Structures are given as C-alpha cells and as structure tokens.
Amino acid sequence: MHSDPKLTERLRVSAKDGPLKERVMFGGVAFFLNGNMCVGIYHQDLILRIGEDQAELALKKPHINPMDITGRPMRGWVMVAPPGCKTKRQLDGWVATAQHFVSTLPIIKKPTARLKKKK
Image (cartoon, rainbow, N blue to C red; front, side, top):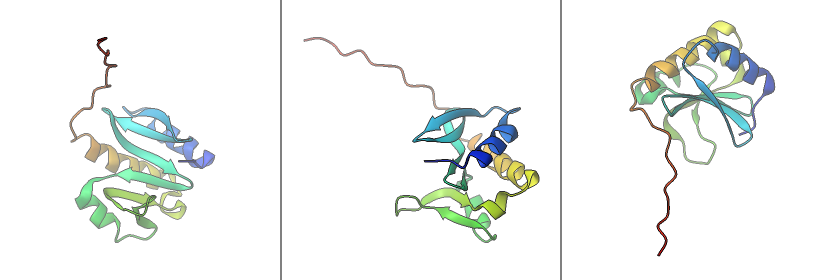
C-alpha cells in the first residue's frame, strides 16, 4: 500500500507517544498493537481496524467507507477519506478508537523460524 507522505508523518506524530509499532508494508506504512494491525494508510486514506460495531456506526458518517481494496470489503475495518481526518483532533480520535478495539484482541507473538528436519 503506497502511503501519502504527509498523512504518514501526521500518523507518526499521533502514534509516537503510545504503544503502536510502525512497520513498512507493501510500500506503505502500518501501525501495530500487540502484533495486530491497528491503523495504516492506503494511498491518501486512513485505514482503521475498529471492529464491526464501531465500523457500522462510523459508516454513517461522512468521508467513511468500508475498507475495500481487493473487491471484498473487510468487516470491522473502515477507510477514512482525507476530509475525515484533516485535523489533529480527528486523526487522534480515529487512532484512539482503533487502539481501543485492537487492545481487546489476543496478543500475536512474533512467529519463530521453524527448523526443517533433514531426512
């Protein structure tokens, strides 16, 4: 996912004092909490993992769309168009919503490399 550099920097600032860990993915940026993807950027849109209930509510707001980058919308995820995260307050609110939901998910530990047995 290729990311808007200005939104990327704003997201880094929003996430810098919290528990989110940045990773580069598919040419873009995503932030993880406890091994689970929480927020990211797809082109110019903010993508958020907020759970099905919150996504249903968010989709009633302007500038919010289902996360659909493959032709199959992802349940519990939304995309926020630039006008929906224009201010620091809006961006911080979305990040907090995503962090709150993702903090309820089981922790994903980093997979360890498996050694193949020689025959």
